[in-house]
Image (spheres, rainbow, N blue to C red):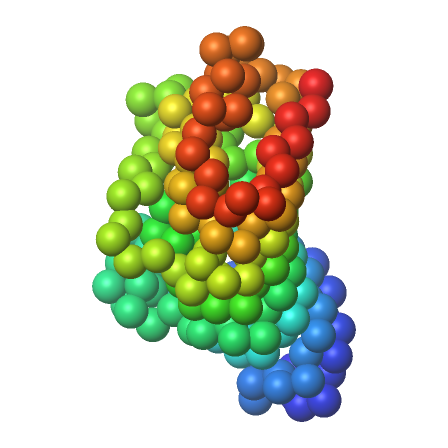
Length: 223
């Protein structure tokens, strides 16, 4: 792809290791990325993950970014196979205002934290499929432990709205929501859909009782 003045990128494809953008896209406003590995035996997951990670670096000027569950999974592979390279080399998204992450299996803690840490002006965060795969074995599922001493700039300054459209009440989900509420100084609305809630009233009360750093934050729970 050699389109230096491109403003909108909607990429949906089966691919291997051939996602090639010649130059960074400084005028990119909106991007939706949905890429899926063809056959793992043809291109190793580590190579595919690195390829998708390289794509991320080329579109880091974007203002509104949406990643499919398959793309998120591929990025997590890049962390799994070469954690240091992915974490240290994560690009800065200084223009990013709206971020949407779809999660089928899991959204690794480090990947999500890097997005928050490297997007200082982020205002909106959406999880259309929730935070975890509730159908998988909880012992197998990746575990979050949100105990970072460094608080991302977007949390303390700009992040206003968070929308979690599927919430089951697992410990991982509760841990992340508590983290957002405790450190989200600029939050105005946190919306959580509890239609698939497992813990019932106990989980709902836990959410309502979490400390909120923002005095103007409204916690909207939908059933």
